[in-house]
Length: 296
Image 1 (spheres, rainbow, N blue to C red):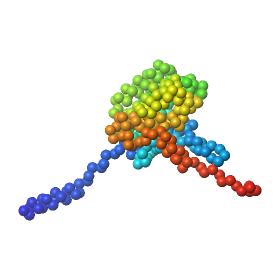
Image 2 (cartoon, one colour):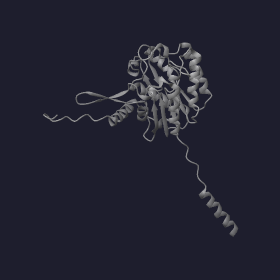
Image 3 (cartoon, rainbow, N blue to C red):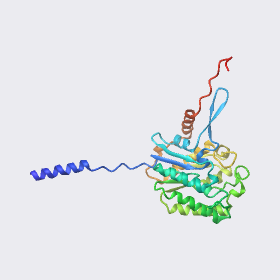
Image 4 (spheres, rainbow, N blue to C red):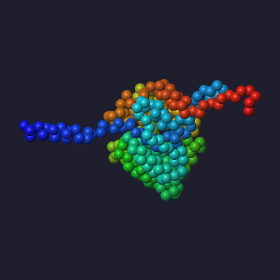
């Protein structure tokens, strides 16, 4: 009996000292956003009415993402390079390393690969000579994402040729044949990596350029919505466009990751607009106080 009691005490002590397994990490616990001008927030703002004028507070894709997520999820890292086009071979690794250092549970790089397909220069800085040089540059971009074990959200390559003469030069835009080759390679690579989620930006952009309507599940954008979603430069989304893109991103994650569901993010566009406006008001510099008459 004494021996049995000692064995039971030892068993209980072992159970108390054995560390329990950590709870599973939710994919949205530590979000990293990396990319180029869309992620940076080029041209996106929220209008705030002042007494005598309308102030336009700049917002970016990360702000829209935070306004869409439920409150317990926050961004762990946001870094975007407005000048990514100058040197993707420098900007890409820098952004990827910064995100990796943040130990993210998911990486959102919607426009991260854009300048690995578009732009003037190839891997060694030489001018692009055609499909092969652009595919070689894309391989460099894909390689920077292979360090991540967590889910990584990217998009395919849209046809942005309507932006030629506005913010793009013809030499920066791949030919239709090259664009097809880039997307084929991207999708093959994605199927070889279980953690990659590809947002179909090419199909959405095509519909926008034709000013056609489209649906994001139950959300309907009627024909004629292009000017509300795409800036006049024909390249960058408006703030409303960012809201639509974030819905595509989160629903894409929702549809491919069992741990993420409808309770993790807002699907009501009006509510998201309201939350984003609240964020903009918090970030905005207060208007100057009026000075009494006669004071300089």
